[in-house]
Length: 277
Image 1 (cartoon, rainbow, N blue to C red):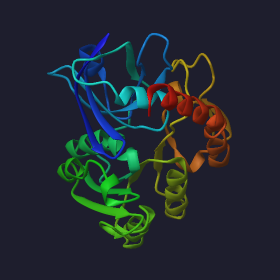
Image 2 (cartoon, helix red, strand yellow):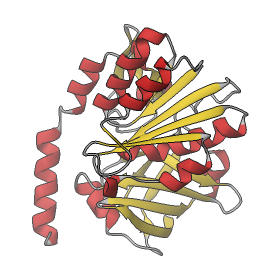
Image 3 (cartoon, one colour):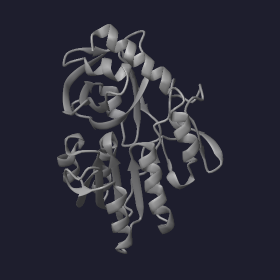
Image 4 (cartoon, rainbow, N blue to C red):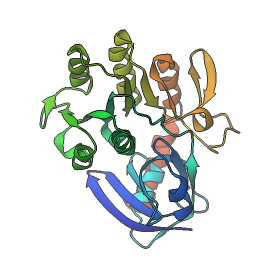
């Protein structure tokens, strides 16, 4: 059992949850993820690590309520326990002193970008951050990102805050300015990561993306999370979750993400009816 230390709704239907998991916190690194179960008969879901505190032995997760399991998770409170939490899983981000780097977070993707930006900054890089959301009220972790970047650019789809448009707008502006960018990380919805790669490809800047593939065991045994990268089949759980976005078969990846949408919607609707909303 894993005890919940704190839970807070940081945007509509978006929650920050801190859990006591000292063994996980001891080994956790940016870019890695967890697999948790809310209860004994529950679904196993992957969540990327949003932060960790080795001294306190805690792990922070940020998630959006998009289906049955995340809805159940959001109903838990401080002092409640998760049935299980496994991690850290996956290969960590490659942190080094590259020079000038850009980290791009879209929507809930700002959360896993945060520890990457923090460690890149600590390694001596000049970190340019770009974060975006559909509206101002859905923007998360702006203050945290300001603290770990040298320059932070903010966008909203509807123009309610920051620059109107998508994260690709300011990204293209920075690249066109001639600033020598050595490496880029982009985490968010698949269509956003694909769009970022389309912008960066002509400049030849390596662009790392985190693939939120469908997962079951998280150890490479089931093959559910397979993705095509550079013409080869990779498993997001053990070969990733980070991959060079210029090599990802985005059409295949996006299609695979939508494969179980009807079943997910049905499970969520049945849960809402049985739980009274």
